[in-house]
Image (cartoon, rainbow, N blue to C red; front, side, top):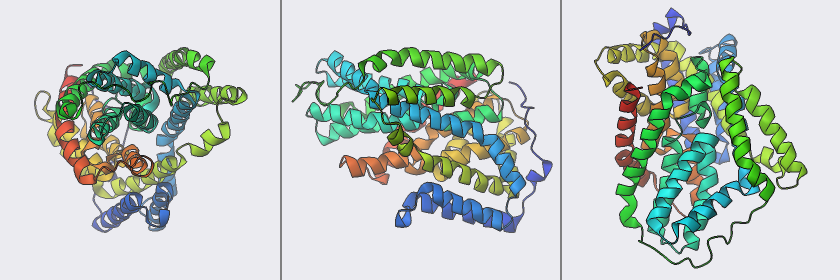
Length: 441
């Protein structure tokens, strides 16, 4: 248990200005409403930037504070884009299709085994390609596989929700596994190896707990075995066999570079962006991937959303929320044993479920130094905002995009009510067990 001393927040943040706090809260609430409802098809990034502009115009934050915000998030933002582009490249060359095909062949008609292997695949892809990349890339692949196997709608939903769930709950082991992780690790100056040395155990526990809970919840929806209507390989063309073979060595090399450069304090984006850029040029020259299409389809709206939302949240925090949150964390920290980690993890999860995990994790990061607490609270903040997002559909942008994509492209509509019912039942035990495991690291 170590005291966090490398981040200093001004003492004035402990004050509360009722009028400015109310204005900040209204702007935040209206922005989240626009993000969720998307009236007139307004992109989530533009809605966020409108809220940020209002925050500046009303004097709820200043241009100097915008510079502070950019200093906090620039590395995370560029790294996130690089990782998502990497996942899109691997998807285009057929890397994930090939692995899914092998898994299907290996399951030999056993749907239970296929279910388990797909969840484990999701846990690995989420760790290496970030939760957003994992859920958006794997969902169409899984749907294609289960439809080829002739599974009914009930079984299809079981597979799809499980992939969506594991994409978030397994996004804790590496700094690159979630935008939340990148932001927090950068804010508290936690390098790649240091981060992994703490989070490897919570990751293992989270994956095993998720697998157990998902199996208990969905196994009755799965048939024992089926005979595929078409061969498992159909519909899964391998686009670039040579690049597929190079896929794992490239990943291993990239992670090694993250670890080595992290020791010397080199921002992770300084590695991720150029390496992914070079890879994009290579696959473009091989004509296996359209660089223009990948860059066009990259999640730029999420980048705009995150930057705008950080400015809004910074204003909300500056005008009183940080002081309130810090006081609550300080009280929680006085409890014995693992209770501070459990209760703070529940708190951060609750925040994520009602305000989205990106603003939630930033508020948590800003509040933790004031609480004079131990460094493990930073990791509890990450776990709460990685796993606790599953309580509600608005908990993470990946979930909102995923639900919308399912409804439009696959005909599978998952209501918010059903999602929350499943999320609460599944998420609470996984979150609890994972937070307890953090105490023993």
